[in-house]
Figure 1 (spheres, chains in turn purple, yellow):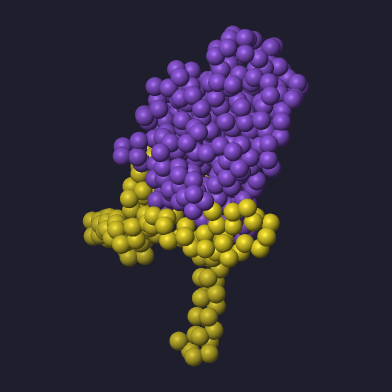
Figure 2 (cartoon, one colour):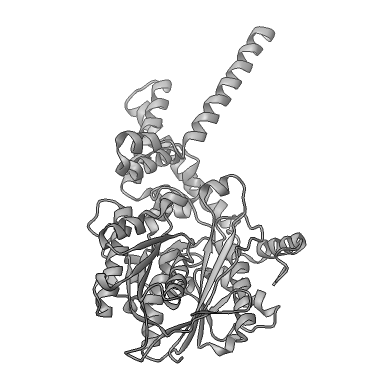
Length: 340
Length: 161
């Protein structure tokens, strides 16, 4: 059974192996530097569906199927699925699970959802409630734009701090045990608190979420006794260029040096020089596809051995912003290691 | 971090410091460049409108009142057409307010949600959402013209125009 460390961290006791992952991305992401690491590159924003929402749902479904197929199991072997997305009522996840026919929990953690899903999947496996579990998350630029901002064809300008919602989905199959014996394993789960420092600019999500990421990282370091240098790579979800710098500075004031091994998937997904994405990528799909694509392959190839992934989310809605509310942030961390 | 582990205590001072820090360090929109671009693109749109005005008046011999209406109709058509062809938002990215303020921007703000929400049907989607962006302009535009009209009417009665 899992062990509680400190205030916010769970240390898994059983070996929780990530047996396989799958990632699907859109066209703009396919032009980015991480493109070779993704499994499926969609040719357009619809992928044969007649709406963007249906497309996003298909992305989740196909990512889930592909991850299960790569793990060598069938969907009947999967005990439970944790899935989430950004859309109202989590329709991408619910409609995708309608066809998967696997026991389903729908999640909303904004852009932290993938890490929330992996955390819960690992915890339920460690507690003996499941043997194999699936975590899935997605986002789609077009569905997010129309829900949170303006119609796509509306002629507006973005601010330099605005981020670009990634069209992407990621799925990971987690299982109990280490019969294959090669990991990677989920070793620690640090659940974040909602932190709100009163940022009201909805075009500066990085600035709004950085204190939450900082809070979770401080809790993780305090609970586990680890330091940033204990990891080969620390990744945050989608703080972007602005939030990444803010986080480095916030942790510096707490005497943690993040300059050597820290990056943000929002800063990795696109090429800032060639792709016009302002402060970088965002969305559930950003950290989901980057983890399931790039990071997982690096772990398998032993180019990375110990990684800390911090999913970051902004828990706002258009309604809350219009009512003048600030942007609350959330961040969940999982530590992954090739060694137990 | 400001506030650190004192989340539950009164940390409004830290929050204020953090907001100031974010305000100070976040990259700002290049205001001067944006204004120049808005001036150039907005001006260019007005020049095109004037060219149509001259065309309608001088070549097609319309009277001034009809020519004005014809110019508005033409510019709205062009704005909506370029929106449909995905050209208007590409220009607007550089032009900013230069493409929002002229009547072509109004056409864009009506055509873009109409296109986007078509998938939810012609009644509850397209037509219901068509004015989701332009609605406030209509509400306050019409309201203020009624108010101004009323004042003008009173002025004429009282002062005798």
